[in-house]
Length: 160
Image 1 (cartoon, rainbow, N blue to C red):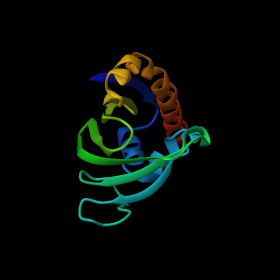
Image 2: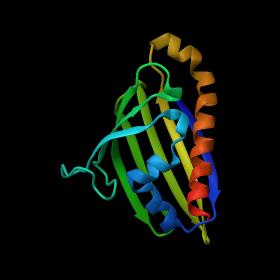
Image 3: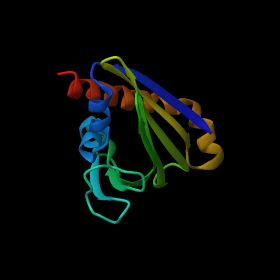
Image 4: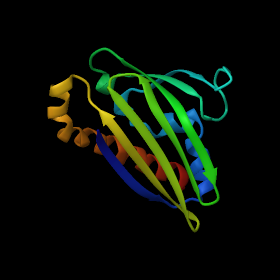
């Protein structure tokens, strides 16, 4: 399985960074405009629609139309784990329906004084079997732009 990782320092306390990433509004704010993200539905672990916090068991239905080209891609993620302890927090979302054969995204947050280290770690498999495997080494190019933008937007939202 292929992996991608990006880490950024945010000049804001862990609690603020964690709170920002705990709500669907944070996802909407940090997603690059070119992805054409639309949150279709959010269902909490108890079946509640539009829960305040994305707890473990929350399901997020999204659609994306990168650059406004072609049909929208639909994507459903499930928050499978979510933990916070003093100085560290993380959550993991897995794609349960979407364009990848496998997508597991671990969002990690580490306190460093009054700052926070944000780390995104992906494990993924592209579709189309052998063809997907052949282009996997080039997939990081797309991820790099997307996650550079996500991290920059996190900094802009929290460092002001």
